[in-house]
Length: 270
DNA sequence: TCCTATGTTGTATG
DNA sequence: ACATACAACATAGG
Image (tube, rainbow, N blue to C red; front, side):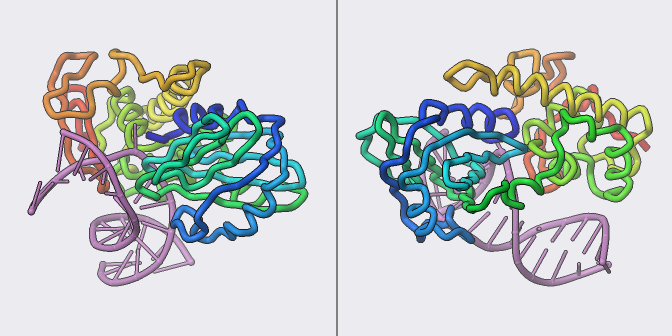
């Protein structure tokens, strides 16, 4: 599930725990979601700490606790956050549970491509501050996109859109949505886009991020899917049709990922 | 049984 | 050093 907007949705799921103290931490230090993280220290430091605030950036979340304690979560492919009843019984894939007075804050991930990070100190850690500047920030300019595409000239544009250092938060479905709206073929080499196409790409990156955050990452307490006017609800199975033209959609591996596009709208140039 | 899966990273090759 | 392609990670569900 988790791309930019879903990550924002899941971040808010721990809001019921804001201002509350962690009474107990449940985890298995050997679980692979703790790779590269001192899980024993994490449990020690978070016990007795109060959840103060949280942020989302790209596909990552930062939870800030009292005592200069920082918890990072990446949801990987199948990760989820929930706020459960305080006495909730943990399940097989609940890898981190923060027991508070009123709620248990739970991170679960059956496939374990997700990741927990942990640091202490007066300022936010490098693994957080080094995330690329957001697509919705002023730093995300047409020129920045054009420069990046020139460097990745021979890669299919679909693969380039998945690169987090320039398109933070874009995942497989958002990349396809952006290309569909910009009428760009996913296999087109990044270096061969015309200036007009680069402008369209930039514009649709921002549009899809903004709208997805509104629809998927909005105030609802259930995950909302984008509407039928988007590629999103039509992309998952064979036989889908382009909601703009009614033409048949194609699904094929591009850049190592299943890619869905509308050949009627997205033509390979050159 | 075989295939797929909304992600990242390490490694091999050019 | 840089760009590119792909296997590997671990698990469930169709």
